[in-house]
Length: 408
Image (cartoon, rainbow, N blue to C red):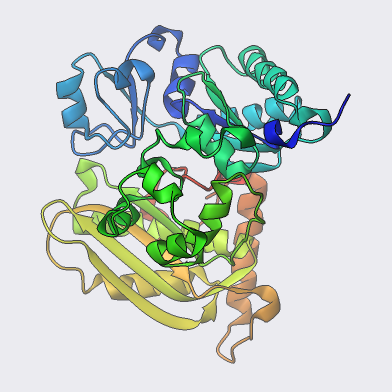
């Protein structure tokens, strides 16, 4: 085959599952197919939708819509409490199905996958056939209710943008020769990495449209952005490949929205202790040590509360639980809505300096506990401080983190 023309060459395929959590529920329960479905963290009007089927989106219900508002917009909406263990299992099946068609370069989130194309695959017609094959494989090997949108482009960033242009079940190609005109119709907020705050910052500098943004020089976009990220974006929007920079992990955290019956101080503390043990287990699993613990509480009718404590580098669950109990004494009165804990000041094993205050017996106890739970199932054994936590704070999936099998 002749060499692919640079003006039409595509190097990346990006797959974005459509309404993933809701689609999994429709696949598991055929009676839900064709109906408006919303997945929620818990069955309460005061929480929000974390996924909505396209039948529900037709009524104006979106991710983040409060349940009470969703009921008003779509009286026939079916609400389902999220079953994250099912979404993880389907995610793994999707990755395997895509891998059977083309090597997976990166699992970007629970519902997004990036694939680096090579050789003849960089020809648009060949890549288009590959996208069709992936969609057919997902239907036959994973489920008929699961649809995806696929984007092709000269770099991964543009491929992600392309995958978002047409949903559901879309397919979009962005070739080098299409740039930058193909981006003019987008909103600045459509760019990955542009949130509400950055949108406001750019608008304050007179950048309201993609046409205006794309007219800037690399230096001007860097100043408007306020960092070198703006200059990097300039190159990406013109189809150039840029090396992905990875930064060291800054923190490990868990949070949980409380069901109505647990929105009181004693039960909120029970949930927070459970989250603390989960976070500490992850810390040890990633061979890291932490020197700071933060807790936060969101209230229904007042400002959020935060508190933190610095400590010697440690992996000790009991030490973290003791700090949580100490900080909790400062909690203001009110009805807690959500709680969270974060461990930061992370140091890998290789850089950890043992403290004279470390207790070898405690360390061996924690290691033994982790080994038992890894072999026989998580929480087979646990510390007495979390005994009454039971099944509180079940598994949840963060946008960019997919739990391991042993967390199911």
